[in-house]
Image (cartoon, rainbow, N blue to C red; front, side, top):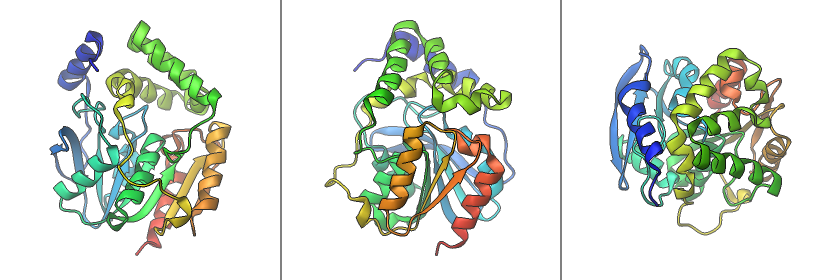
Length: 289
């Protein structure tokens, strides 16, 4: 699959000029890791038990800025850009994000970590726990769902229309398409969050359109009832109703899972309600051995 020329030009512009990473006092190292034929941008902060953040499919690793500042005083915080997002190279062939994550942990010499994933990052976190349970000390899924459970026709149609519009009309279409989606209703009503989402969407079109390259790990079909990892499910009560219901399903199906519903938050829970999100995550992590 060959990316359209405008996507390549956009990616080059992002790499050279438009991406800016603020400086954090606990930053230990950042760089590029060659994993499974791809090149991922990563950042490591602080010291302590490893805590890895996986971004949503409509953002990049910068969506975790508030969490980096909050948790890097007690944890080794890792965040990275999935292929095609942020400062990571665009995918050119099918790949499994969960295997990229596992390879990155090995590259960083981290045997185990608590994995936090938002939206599609939540699906990737679930895949990681299924494929490499020995490497996952805790699973935290925010507004996410297992990749093997298909979404409704209505939700699939909405997201497919956004991708189709982007291919036909260019980057501006994907920005407006997602900002108009019900998942981002509450984010759109908060000017600072809306501004960040507009930036994330505009700068990550290559990653959004590269989503069809993503594959699940090559393992038997997992069963949520067989997961044995400490699990936290988090969702905003103003998110798409289907996503909220899936959060409830995960909490019921995964043994011992804890569920937290954040009031007045939509899809980007950690950005819209960072204090409530950080407190809930910190409380859960205190109980993880």
